[in-house]
Image (cartoon, rainbow, N blue to C red; front, side, top):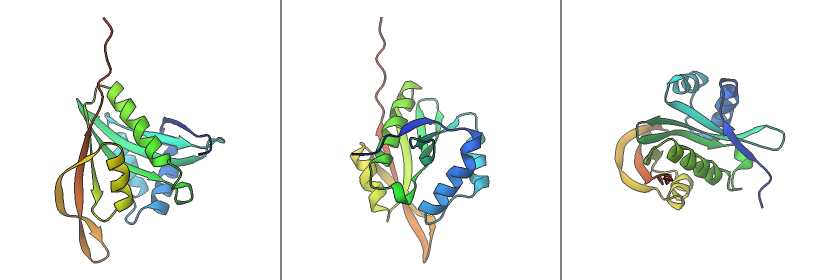
Length: 158
């Protein structure tokens, strides 16, 4: 059973906390300036997962352009991983994007990130291709898997 959490839209005041989570959870973390830059776009936004006291446990940063969306970044604090929070963020993101009219969600993930790939597959993502040498790695470069999933289109009532 997971502890009570909530998911809300992210704000500019969350960016430092998001960058700190990313730094603790990622091999090649984004910098604060990358978070700011990725959040400035008119079509960019984030969802933030918070605990009962409002502390940030994780986030999903995305971009939505017409009927396609891209998951730019997602992370959960290492000490909060393994509780289903990544899945809850993905589900909330899929619902939000579908409500905005997006029909497909795209992402790229390190080929070696088997936990993330398994999570994405559980949420309906399929592999669309490979971007060779996309990510910096300890020894050279690592491929990115390109993945996507369809989003349910909300039914209209006439």
